Length: 317
Image (cartoon, rainbow, N blue to C red; front, side, top):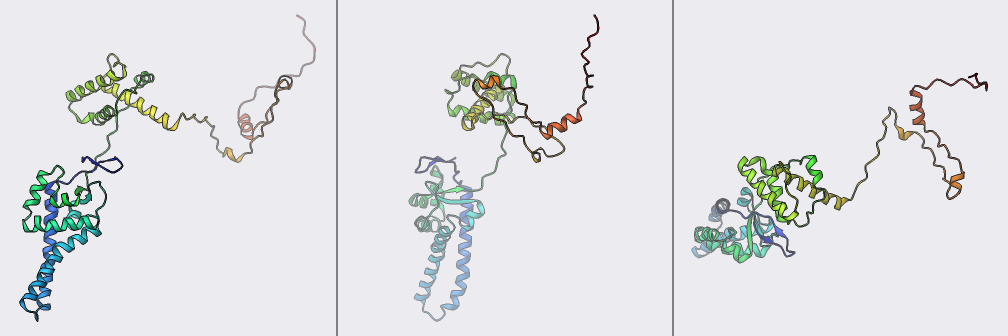
């Protein structure tokens, strides 16, 4: 990745184009431009038949400059840095800060490109791209531009393995404030790709990362616990704390009974005002009205047998 930094001190994760892809895009553009010039030359033969030799030569030179300089400048300005060859190779010309180019950038690149690409057969451009750290030719240096890749192969996201529940509970009281962000990134990248590594290499990397985490947190790896499981538990605890800090503690919803009919369609009982102070102790407990849903449940349950009425007569002992 490139180390480009914008004016707001934001690092850009763009990838500069390599010399082979740039050379292929350059060849495609040259073939197209020269093809257009040859087609126009056939039309100029009939248009300049009545002119003298000097006028014909001037027309041909002007047409050549228009096709080799004017057309590339217009194309890169209108398409924001994508010519036909760059579009086919998935490339784009951008400024040094990652923004889109303008007419002055395309003008400098086109004027210098006529010398280093057309007149020098691309030798100067190739040497400059090989010497430059970001693969820039002379025209890019003078214009303050950079050719980057737009089509980057998409990699499937690798899910981190979940930690054991008993180990995740032990990480609740661990102080994670001293762990730097670089170490967190290394641990997450290892957990996402641990299945792709050699078993011995994976074990050695997990052990080294676990030692680094232990040195900064003071929490040792439990006896008999694989270092990868310890790292997964630490990362899960960090993510849980970040979630609680961002969203807060969410109270669980109480379970609700499901009935064949919709319970919200039934009327809800009104709450009675509760007495306060000393009146609360003297007032009898009010019985809330039974909701229709509760009545339906009570009717479906078996009822106990009714007690016989009392006569007031007590049998002798």
